[in-house]
Image (cartoon, rainbow, N blue to C red; front, side, top):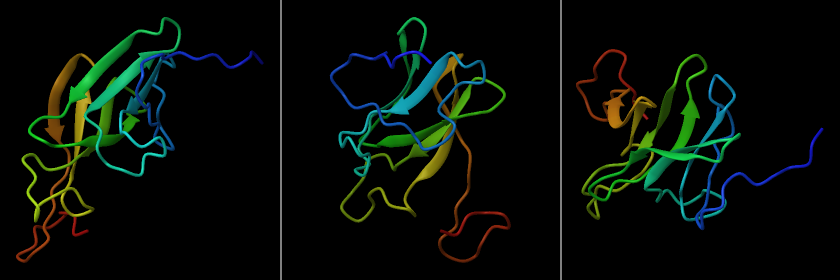
Length: 133
């Protein structure tokens, strides 16, 4: 086993999700940039990946309009990354929470193009298959 080495040197946090942070080819690690080193404050503005061999950093997604993003996970078979995105233009009564967020996915070949991955109904009538939480 080799000694650990630092692969990023930017003066910001690099928050890893507890599973699925390696790209399928084993060359990239995906992370978010929340301000709290423990990741407990959901205020990240980017989803990024770093190449473990070269140190190259790529921004896969940059949130817009006051939204925040985090909890990035790699697809196990291709270059897609799924993560949580909070609401754009949040207001005091509509801010990030377990029921004010969505799952989105980006492809490494088309960064910044987020595709919505879920549907959520929190009031009736409920859509079959939509999330309730």
